[in-house]
Length: 225
Image (tube, rainbow, N blue to C red):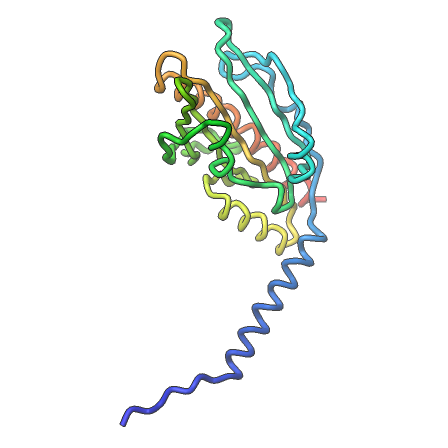
């Protein structure tokens, strides 16, 4: 005769209490997070042969919903007038970050292709590696644009918002300075998609290390203090 399995309710209760305690601790860590100011002027006005032509403000609704610590919204252009839009949002709160993959489709734009692209970059410590970024091809009527975006947390770059939020939570729990960034690059397709993608990659190769340096440098400084 098979012995009937009966769960040990004390173990179940203990596991529940441990999980509840971790949730409470994580919420307390959210309130005592160590952060630092970001100087957006460290992002250069000249990137990959393109010059900044316009600096914009984040719309009021986005500022209210995301409550970012700092941000840049800039339009760059080369000598021929070819435009590139750059958005970087810095913050230490979970609600500051959202996935552009959810909000990019809209206003008539539809996702035609999406994939993860590996961009060769040089980290602030001189290490060469490949940063993973989401790459989207959007289309509205005859218009197309290439979008690259990723999340940066200290020295780590990821295309996943879930992994990004986990990295931020780890820093909070360990009482380390917690600050991350969403980096997004939009390039309209003029002649062909590959040309637009190459311009986006050129921007990413310069921008990702700059944003990493902003976060890693300040984190290291605050940790020593």
